[in-house]
Length: 184
Image 1 (cartoon, rainbow, N blue to C red):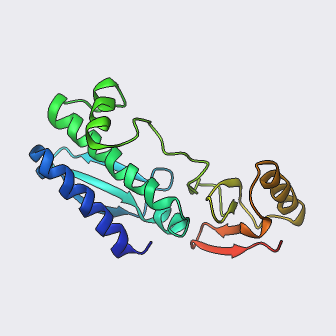
Image 2: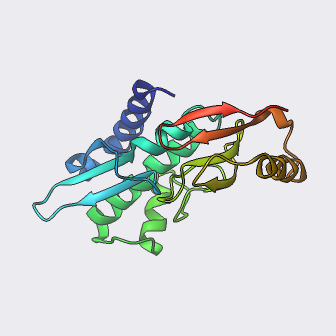
């Protein structure tokens, strides 16, 4: 996914939901945050009355080429609009029953977090990750380039997880969002 595709997805969901729920018209976005490293999206209200939906530049860059990521991103966008709708209807601001009901209204999975096994995040200590290129499933995060033995452990782990082939594994450089295919 490139930035244009992300924007198209966001605006498609936004237009669909704002047509059903005009109270969402006061919410602005998407705003892209470079600081968000562990959450893919965020609904925010500021003290001066601004209401906005934010998406993580970092996590989108790290995961954009994973085949299942578009679906995950769409669910995140809907998740954040569920927070916005919950605020507008109930003045709710948590992952409670009213938010879960709003998730059903907007078509989001009523779970607090996306499946972190399938979205590479960027923990503060991490510089690298070993993941399955096709599913996005992360084996582990490292603060240095993974060693040969760690790479072998990852291969064994993915095989135990019934991963299709080892040549779908890669080392991801979280610092600059580059991927490197691991040899089979």
